[in-house]
Image (cartoon, rainbow, N blue to C red; front, side):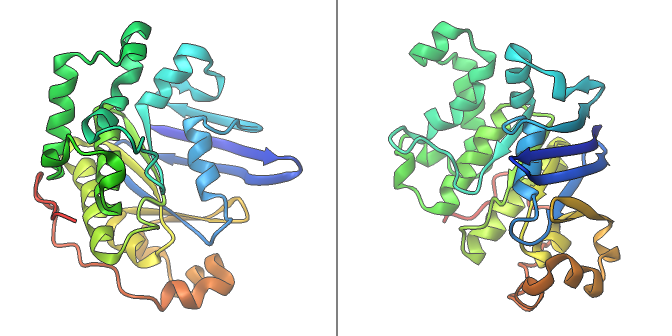
Length: 269
């Protein structure tokens, strides 16, 4: 279980995350919603410890994440895989190598420096690519792929970390509706088939209601809503999104989710 207690992250005098407290049970698919600048990205980066907490605690299965340093911190970042809006792939490297980067935390330093990948890691990476129907792209440079393909590579990289939790920071913000569905379905498969907890920042309220089993709403760095999607009324949503409410609630409907897609059935993009 992930426990966040009074978490605050300040940059100068500004609190990007302000006294946030919540718990996430294993296997949940939790959407973090709110307008731009609400603190969603900083919350996930702080849980992963890419940002340093100013106050409060992060505890995962009894492990005090806020106290970790050095090797233990690197191990935590492997257990809490990040997926970023801009993919964070190395464009000049091939797809397979980008996925194998997810195994660096398990390798001795000499293997990391020489990128001498064990055969079992290569097999694991190829299996992840196959699950998202992009194994034929393994030898291509990452910067030659479409946005949807690059994000699936990033998800495969997160999966080979064999994480306990995935932290997805606006993973579909730069994608078209077709690729949005492909990527969200991929995250859903990871959550349901592997039982991996997913904490996903989403700007679209329709997507959040469609894919998530619980929503955490943020405004000005604070958690102001925590409940099931059905409990998020239009009135509460308008309070969350303020001036953006008309845009958020009046946009295109989210792609319909028709059950949990089987592994390896993502469309080519």
